[in-house]
Amino acid sequence: MNHRNFLIIIFVLYMIGMTGFMIWQGIGIAPDRYALVLLLGSLSIKKTRSFLFDWIPFLFILIAYDFLRSLVPYLNQHIHVLELVNADIAIFGVLPNTFLQNLFYQPGSLNFLDYFSTIIYFLHFALPLSFGFILWVTNRAYFRQFSLGILLLSYAGWVTFVAYPAAPPWMAANQGLIHVTKILDQTLGKFPAKYELPTIYHNFNPNPVAAIPSMHAAYPLIIFLFALSFFKFKALYFLPYVFAVWFAMVYLGEHYVIDEIVGGLYALVFFIVAKILTSRVKFLHG
Image 1 (cartoon, rainbow, N blue to C red):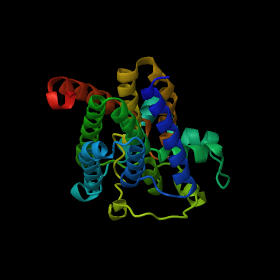
Image 2 (image 1 turned 120 degrees about the vertical axis):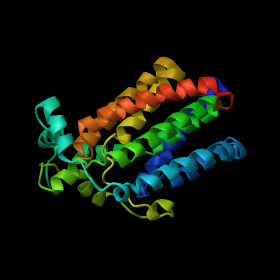
Image 3 (image 1 turned 90 degrees about the vertical axis):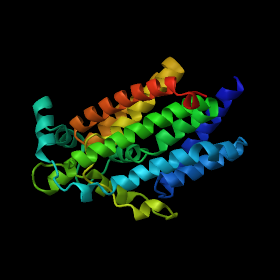
């Protein structure tokens, strides 16, 4: 085994351990908190100065995106609700959220699938940052290309949220328009909350009308596309996770399938855009 592969294996084990510890201790996985986990990883391989130089701009822009995302409800108050419901029913003949919950969810009795889907949901920030760190360790040009793709994708999503704020399934259910349970409300009460570490995310208001495109669907897919580009067929091991995320978002009542389809299209477009731009810009190449 060469040194690079050894570092990747060690880092993957480290991130699995730290992520599991954060979930076990009830520590929310926010980008600024997770950056500290990555910083500790950089200390172990004696690349802290390079980490700060490469990662601070990326993290600042990513966190700025989430700040802007919290402003969407104030910028456009015309919320779209029934269009997404009707789109899913037109495609599938039934509403997939209701269909899956009728099949697997038992009110008052949480099961493995409920908890598994919740954990998948909260890896939303952990996976892109972890994958970015692996690229940074192995090839900094890969890292720059991937970070460009993630940032372009995120801000394109933000522009769409402003132009077309859309309610998720649980919000439509709160209005009595569909029958869907917000399962996260049930599962989160069962997770511990032993430590409340500082995070600037306490100062952000979540954007409840950012249903389409689904960034929860787009992030795993763009990770897969970059992994396929960089690591070839080894990336296929990540594909089941992509499907698991897409299933979880619908089952939990957080997204419609149409949200995920549009999110997937955004991921594909900005993967291609990032590849084109980095092939033409020397700084991102080197």
